Structure formats: C-alpha cells, structure tokens
Length: 409
Image (cartoon, rainbow, N blue to C red; front, side):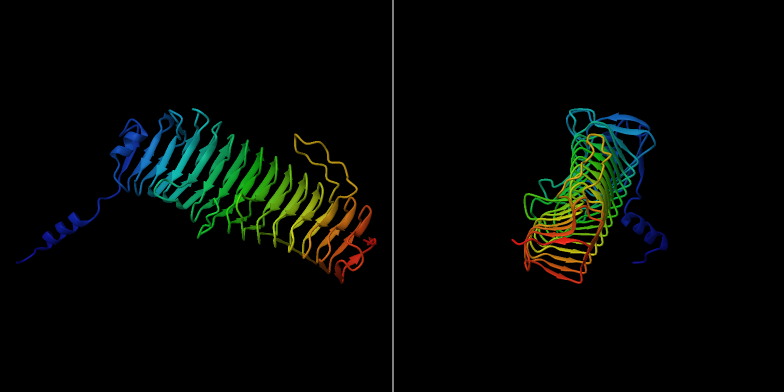
C-alpha cells in the first residue's frame, strides 16, 4: 500500500493535540463558570474589567489559566470562596482581585491540587482569609507558588497553608490583618519537601507576622513589622523541627521578634529591633542563633529558657531600654533585670556574643552548666556579667567583662 505525503500530513494533524485557545469574559461567555464549561484543558480564560459575583468552582481540570484584565474583581455570591481550585493540575491564576463580601469567607481556596501558580493578584477587604491552601478528600496539595500578590484587611490570615508539599510564597505584601500574616502548618505530618517563604513584606498584624508550625521550613529575606505578638514564631501543637529563620528583618513587635520552640530550629543573620519582649527567644530544645543583630529589645536581646541551645556570633545593643512606636503600646520602662543575654537553662554554649549598653546586665546567667567562650559586654547599667549560679557553676573562656558579679549560690 502506497502512502502519499499529503496522507502522512493529515494523519499527523489528526494525532496532534488541539492548540490551546482563549475564551473571553464577557465576550465569549457571560461569566467565569460559563467560560470554564466551554474551556478545554490548556485554554486561557481572559476575564474583563468589572465585578464578577459568582462562586467559581474549578474541579478536576488541567492546564487552565485565569487571567484578569486591570479592574477584574471576583466576589463570592454565597458563603463560599470566590474561587475554588479542587483536585486540579497545572493551573495559573494571575491579575485578579479577590474581594469576598459574603459571610467573611475566603478569597481563593486551593484544595488537593498540584502545580498551581497564583501571581500578581490582590486579596482585599474583610474576608476571613485571603488565600487558603490545603488538602481535599483525595489528597494534599503540592507544588504551589504564590508570588507578587497583595493581601489587605482580612480578619484571619492573609495566607493559610496546611500540609502542602513544595510550597513557595515569595514577594507578597500583607497589610492590616487581624490574625497572622502567613500561617504554615503540617498537622504533625512532616512534609517531604518543606515550604520556602522568601522576600515577603508583612506589616500591621493583630497576631503574629509569620507562624511556622511545620518542620523543615526555610523563612528568609522577609520583612516583618508592627505585629501584635511575635514577628516570626516557630511553634505548634506537635514538635516542629529543623526550621531555619535566616536574613529576615523584624521590627516593632508586640512580643518577641523571633521565637523558636520545638527542636533544633535556628535563627541566623537576622536583624531584629524594637521588640516588646525579647529580640530572639529560644524556648525549644537544642535551638540556635548565629550572627544576628538585635537592638532595642524590651526585655532581653536573646533569651534562652530551654537546654542545649547554642548562641554564636550575635550582636546585641540597648536591651531593656527600648521605646516602642507601636500604636497600641505604651513606652517600655527600663527594668532592673533586663539584659543583653539571659542564660536561663543548662547545657548551653555562648560563643563570641557581643553585648553593649544593656539596661541592667550584659549577661544574666540563672542556670549552671553552660559554656561561654570569647563573649564580651560593655556599658551595662549594673554589671556586664551577673551569674547567680555561683562560682564554678559555669565555664568562662577568653571572655571580657568590665564588671561582674558571681555571688555564692
């Protein structure tokens, strides 16, 4: 049998997948749900300016892009999210404004979906959460990217994530949130590919700026300020391990700037200033700090209350003498116990920590069995070193203190 060239070309065309198309709203469909009903997998839905009041439901779809023109707003019609992406793959949402006005609900919910990108979207006004990411009845979400989005005015979290594998939240701005700016949790089921939270700006939250209740997360190069509680908190109902908090800027917080609970979590290279309580608090076993700069903390520059912690190369100034500028906080008075470092647990190591100009003590040591190497303090209001564990209770090597007190136990 002879096959012509034209016949081969025809067979190739029939075998090839259909080219991705575009559907415009309202040009080709009266609404977004109607456009989804017309769309084939791989299509782009172009959403025109105006407020689209509907509960958009995208279920078990692949390759769909929702692209909003300037002024395209999604509002929920009932007490459901304005947009739900459920059990989908390879979805892009870009350029849309989510403004849920019914029942203080969620702008966008992603459930059990993979390879979803949400970019250059705005989440505004009074819903409970701007963006909620989590499992569906068929499994967890995975490989979710949220980037260059804006969140304003939610009563819960700007972004709330639960158990997502391979989550990245980057370059987002979150302002005026009644709860926590970003919440990441894993319900005690550790992720194989932990979350990356990087380059975000979080300002003016009623609770924490960033709450990490998931092991292995990296939070880096974020800016957090004006929080009701901690700027960045690593905490959870189950043990949270091996979280890295690196190169963030945290200022003007209603509690500690950075608080580490759990096991083996670390804070490295952060800048922390004007905190109501400690600049950095280590409340978890074997947590660590390194090369942080802490200034004007309300109580302690670095507060250690758990055993086995390591504090190395940190710089602390003005502990206990800060005057905060948070709108709902009075000025902090100096306290006679506030110090650059509180060593309040056993088995700790303090290496090359530099403290200056503390309200009371440079180092206040209340527990025995710690090692101090190459540490120094100057300009303290009372003593540069005050060790109430007594002589021989702790080990000091190559340290420099202009004044010290080590009374008998």
